[in-house]
Image (cartoon, rainbow, N blue to C red; front, side):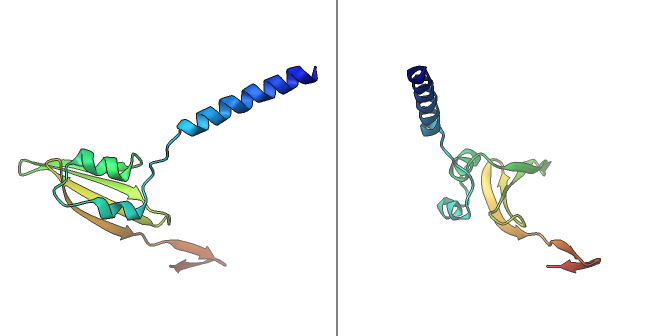
Length: 110
């Protein structure tokens, strides 16, 4: 019985360790912005920054396709916006959102 339990536990550990080795985390970090240049194509930028983005705007203006994607920063009130014009990186910026904290019935704005 003990050898059967040992065998089962060994199989489970082997399975879990092999799965964990194949997982790669390519999440956005602000230091990845250093690898960007204006004019890079959309696929190059998203490959550098990772897959954790949200498309916030997509429209056609004067026959140009405009797309804006954002990545959430480490701190929840920081967003990084990247604008593509005709599939090329046109500009990016860091946006800090204002937070409201409720304290003893009054609103404090940080």
